[in-house]
Length: 296
Image 1: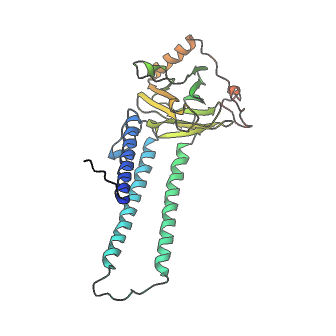
Image 2 (image 1 turned 90 degrees about the horizontal axis):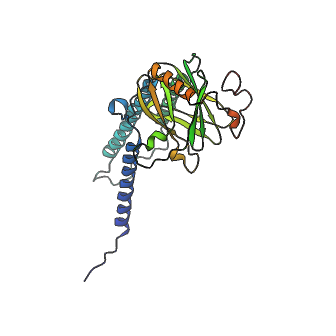
Image 3 (image 1 turned 120 degrees about the horizontal axis):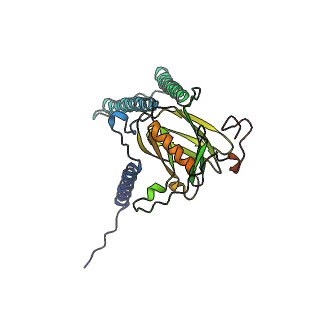
C-alpha cells in the first residue's frame, strides 16, 4: 500500500529554497553562455578582456571596488563573529548585561566611515566616467548609430555612406547570423559614436568595449573608443524596448584600415551613398542637438 507523505512547512520551505537556488544558478550559467566570445577570468574580475584603450580603466575600477567591498564584508563578518564569541552568555550569568543607551565614539565611527567610503567611490567613479565620455579629441571615424525597433542603422559620416539593418531572425541554422547588421571599425583609430533613436529608448552596448550608452528620442549622445584588437564582437540593445528587444542584435567587425576602406567601397557600389536623415525619427531632435555640422 502506497503511503503519502505530507511535507511539513519546514521541508516545503527548504525545497523552495533549493529550487530557487538551482534556478538562479541556471540563469547565471545561461547568461554566461550568451555573454559572447570573450570570457574574463580572475585577472579581469570576470569582465570580458578589454579591447579598447579605455577598457582597462573600467576593469581597474571594477576590481578595485570589489576588493574594497570584500574587505569591508570580511571586516563586518569578523566583528559579528567576535561579538558573538566574546559576549556570549556564560553558564554562570544570571543577570542581564549592562545596558548602554548610546556610545558616542562608536556612533561617530559608523557614521563617518561609510560617508568616507561613499565619497571615495564617488570620486573614482566620477573621474573615470569623465574620461570615458570625453569627446574633446578629434575622431578618425564618426558613426551615427541609429537604434530602432528592432534593429540598427549605421551612418558613416566621413565616407557619406550608410547601412540599413533589419531585425535579427535567428533560426539556429548556419548563416542566420550573417543577416544581422554589422558595424565596421578600423583598428587603432579613434571612433566617435553619435547615438540617436528612431522611436523609443534603446541602449548601444558592445560588451567587449566595456562601455554602453543610452539612445534617447530627440537627443544626441556621444562617446569615443579606440579599438585595439581586430576581430568580430557582439553588440546588442541593453534597454528593454519592446516585444523583440532580445532580437535587436548586431555585429562589430574591427578590421584593418584597408579592409575598412574596402567595406566603404562595397557600400558605395551597392548604392548606399548619402546619410539616412534623422528626420525619419518619430520625434525630431531637440534644439541644439545635431548629428553632423549641417544639423542632420
